[in-house]
Length: 366
Image (cartoon, rainbow, N blue to C red; front, side, top):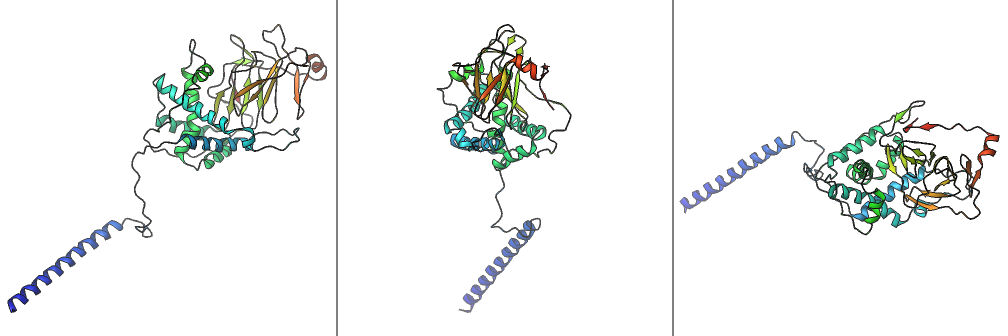
């Protein structure tokens, strides 16, 4: 019995010593691990380390929701002309769900065309560079900050919903050249095709710091990727974009144009679907929701009494009525009364004021 008791006691003592030794090792290891950590960080608040790369994707519905957020920011800065007596409506009143979906579909198709047709898929590096470019070159830093904040300051959402549309548009136009199908025709032909949902390249994006420069008074800075050079065109300011349209080009009169966004320092071509016939020396006025183009000359000989209403939110044209329209004319003036667009013929205009006409071979901002 004594031998068994001694053996049992020895076993218990050995087990206890082993447990104490293991606890000492665990305690030493814990002290070493936590010595370099923030003492206020507990295991409950510790977050798992992110992988070096991540693969994400946005659903189509999410992209549409973010597009509405972007449009709402721009709409807040859109000029509602003082001549209009009606209150400025909400963005939902001027842009439908279907129109938001069309905007998303357009940039997804552009991205898909770059990959499928030109075998040049947009890379994560290009998207990061485009977001950085916007932050460095913006001429409206306060508006860009609004956009970033509206998108949650999430660099992934910003590159996908703000940078990708601008970049894909510019790259498509870089690849478009003589003899190729016009971009509007390509879009029209592919309207029944459902674009692929973009799966972002595995990458972590870094949110850039937005510059504080903005515009400097009495200075010029070239804009990147403007429309074809022209003169005798028109330009209107909407509050968030400058719209340039028509004029004389190298090959004759034009019915093309572009929208310049100083917030992202980028150009977007205006649609030519249902656009007025090519012309120069016409007029254009901004109504608060549309640019109205009227009159002008198609060939430097004849004059026109036709026009069109351009909606930049939907990138669409609607012809103006010719019923009871004034006689054809060019080099006239036009004003927006709040409800009507009125023309003054060039002879009457010349009696009242002299309007010097400038010819521009390139576009810039001052």
